[in-house]
Image 1 (tube, rainbow, N blue to C red):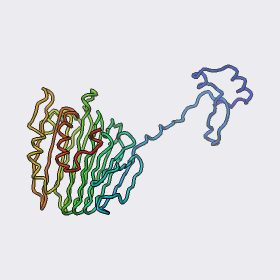
Image 2 (image 1 turned 45 degrees about the vertical axis):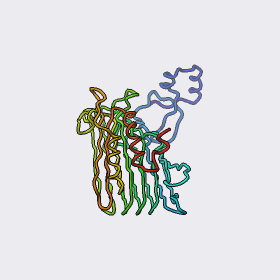
Image 3 (image 1 turned 90 degrees about the horizontal axis):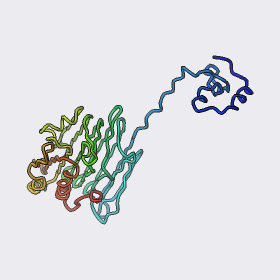
Image 4 (image 1 turned 30 degrees about the vertical axis):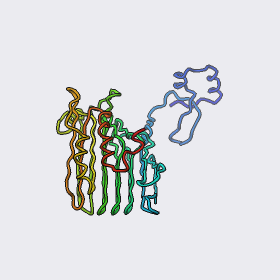
Length: 333
């Protein structure tokens, strides 16, 4: 490396205004003397052997916790915690259930993002939980996005977990876990709906990884467990009749309640018989009931060719199974 030129020489050369390209290669530049560890002004013919690592990608790390209980004849907020991109807002309501809206301010998830929600409903209290909008799972360059949900309901309490749909984009990688603890006499309505691309937007989810895991316990007993996993060829997996029957919109809804059996036939009427929307799309669904201790569970599954067709049956089904609370207000906006 040649010796630095005098400062005056640098000023003389600056009389000719260089272009961006020539300025980059100019001998009148700042360079780092790594041996001395100081910044010098001088002339260098070339700066090499200096590798600049790209900044680490910013990742979502959000967690929200909500604790509510019965007080003064109605369900009230007791504790609230939120950090990162996880926010919780509660619209004003006149009575039970307490309503909470979950918000991911990051606007979606991609590889390496982590989002967690914890909801605790006290004895005899009730809460309805939804999301501000559909959660979007974007293409992952590495790792996978993860969402964890933990619900705990005290004796005689009720919870409705009703997030809006999750939209999975091409080459996304996503894992979602739902863990529910119900005390004796507690009730729960649980829903997860997923769209593998949006038909109206011309989107198609061809490749990626998706894993949905549910575990529901009541009075210390495991009453429901399921894992739905698809990938890496998502498009091929959705073609299987046992998976989605060529549909791209799916939903699972579980009601744990003593009144579940009385709603079975009406739920089946809403879901309807298997319908074919065309040579490439199949729409079907079904519902079943099991006795579980002193309670019971109603499990419903629906598939459709797109999100609009799915909602046409999902909305009245939520209204039926959610009793007097009905549909979350944000679902109708």
